[in-house]
Each structure stands twice: as C-alpha cells, then as structure tokens.
Length: 94
Image (cartoon, rainbow, N blue to C red; front, side, top):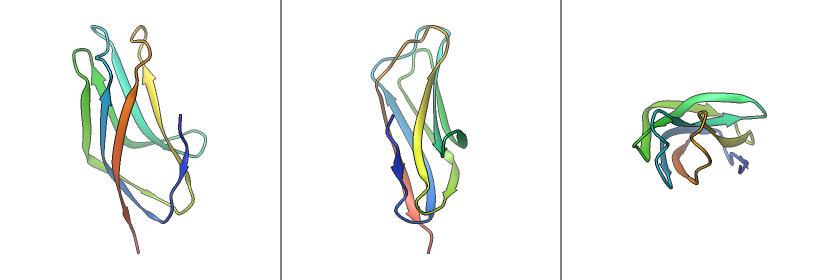
C-alpha cells in the first residue's frame, strides 16, 4: 500500500486499474480510492473473473489539500493476491 498527500484541493476521477492476472472463476477484485485511515470513496472498480482491466469513468471525489490518500485493493474469497497497476486523474480546484 502506498499513501500520498494531495498537494492541493482537487477532484479525483477516471480511475483505471490493471491486474497482472484475472481473478479465478466466480471471484472478484475491488480497488477503492480511500482517505484517512478507513474512509472508502465512491471512486472504485470491481474486476470479475476473466477480466484484468476496469475503469470508473463516472464517479469523482473532491479531496482536501494535504489529505492522506491511498488505493485499497480487496480480493474475494480465493482470488489470491494480484499486482495492481492503477492511475487516476487529479484536477486542482482553485
């Protein structure tokens, strides 16, 4: 897990996630943008079995300056660990 501080007040959007391999049959892998210690945001994707790539191009989240932010990844029952490659757009709010 990597935490980072937002350099300025802004909006996060367009979350794109790529897994190194697809989840097992009937399993899922979910990635959420989160702030602080335990606050999941609406910017998230769920990748189902057979898939490796997913995007959330609908939701956006406003983040305060200097808020601690991270990406949380959760595998369902037997999906196992995956390398997660993720990116999102961040636009400054003046």
